[in-house]
Image (cartoon, rainbow, N blue to C red; front, side, top):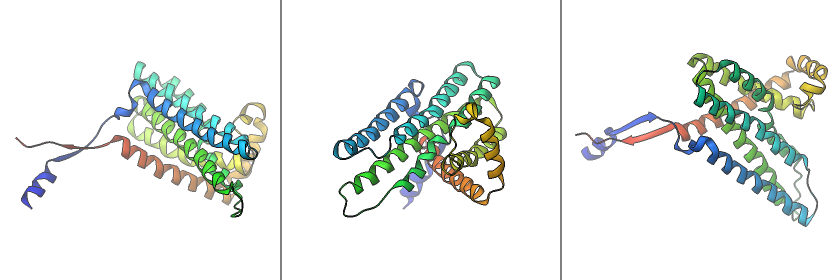
Length: 239
């Protein structure tokens, strides 16, 4: 018993940079690219045996890569040049506009039609879930990278404020896309419709609940990701 207690006491808990993000995050991008190709392969199987479910899935998966690439550049720019607040702010604004595309694919599960007598039912279940899963991975990794860029440029309090605020904002963006049928490109070619939908949705109870629930989901998943990547248990033997 004494040896067990001594063994436990010799462990130290600490936070450190993750070894997985070496080579400027290229390994992570490559892994996410492979997962995306696997998702597309599931769709190709669906096309081979029947017909495509919806090619918008592939487009939505592509859109989930935009915030990932933006966060990748923000992370590496701040790592290379240090405090560049203007550049980080501009990249963060673009990132916020496209970040909702990552969790958006969760709502694609609403298109699922369950027919137990149909051969492709379970393939569709796995395929839609895989698309949503990969898209979520893209979003969570992008959130980690942009958060790390914020930490290099801003103080800790403001950094956590940005992180917490980005979660329900992402949920609100998903609501605008799924319910209001808006998309990130409307900010360029139809800003009037964006403004109108923002005003109408600001006091909508469904929009507020939806935004908060997506925000909580993203927050929990990000906390899990952060804990897995950053949390370390190290054993140090006393001299």
